[in-house]
Image (tube, rainbow, N blue to C red):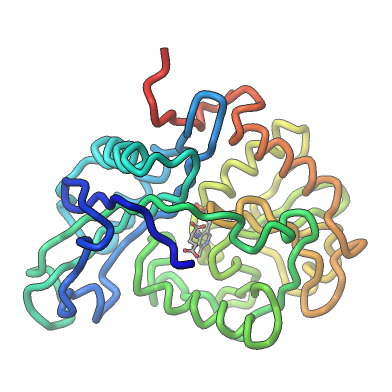
Amino acid sequence: MAMRAEWMWMNGELISWDQAKVHVFAHALHYGSSVFEGIRAYSTPKGPAIFRSHEHFRRLMDSAKIMRLTPVPYTADELIEASKAAIRANKLESCYIRPLIYRGYETLGVDGRKCPIEVIIGTVPWGAYLGEEAINQGVDVAVSSWRRTPSGVGAPLGKIGGQYVNSQFIAMEAHDLGYDEAISLDIHGYVAEGSGENLFMVKDGVLYTPPLYADILGGITRDAVMTIARDLGYEVHETLITREMLYLADELFFTGTAAEVTPIRSVDRIPVGSGSRGPITKAIQQRFFDITAGRYPDEHGWLDYVYEQE
Ligand code: PPE
């Protein structure tokens, strides 16, 4: 079934899903002039809680700044409140939140800065990104023939609509070849990330993840997982990783809002470690899901409750 919800927040008001429309000459539709976020709200004993809302809306504003989609007509705090209002209107216990800022309809032409800036926030149900089974069993991935858009060609630190053409090439090729997902390399040949996930490697009990200058998106789940790993007593290094290091890793996993923490069980058909989820991946998943479910103390202030707390 298509993803939908009853209410959509659009330019300051809650409107019905079917009324949430753009003109076919909207600039963003032709030229990719949009920025977006993907955020989850989790079900907890105290009602739905948005995971790291401030970090996500800050990144949205940063993406808008890079893309010259400014001034954004709402503050980050106003958009967080709008997200909560949409979740309440849709009576959702958990959901995926998709804010989008885009250039609407005015004129054609590459420089769209005469076109109006519009803002929507959708809140929809969304389960495990790579399948429920993938969370336990892991996914099979390939190294993509497509390189990640380098900084200077695009702006990989911005979550910009048009840049997801690169991600689509990576994901479509992977699926056509029978893989669940692919890992892109940066323009120099170092490991970057998945089409919509960051990547971690475990070797001899130590965690490694590519640095921001490997043309990755600065993932908020990536940041949370680095924190969780250190809380659990593991060493974490942001360092360049080569393709063959993937083959020799003890464990590999993806992180992302949609993907959460998903183990990778093979790369280019070579089994990763034992070929099933490793112990460190499992420990990190467990802490991540315990925090997001409100079962483990929220020591880092990551949960933002949708309903007022007593
Ligand atoms: N890299 C890319 C390219 C990316 O799109 C995402 C999020 C990440 C890394 C992980 O970032 P974070 O969510 O802050 O931990 N991808 C979003 C879009 C997925 C989609 O299919 O749409 C997401 O996970 O919401």
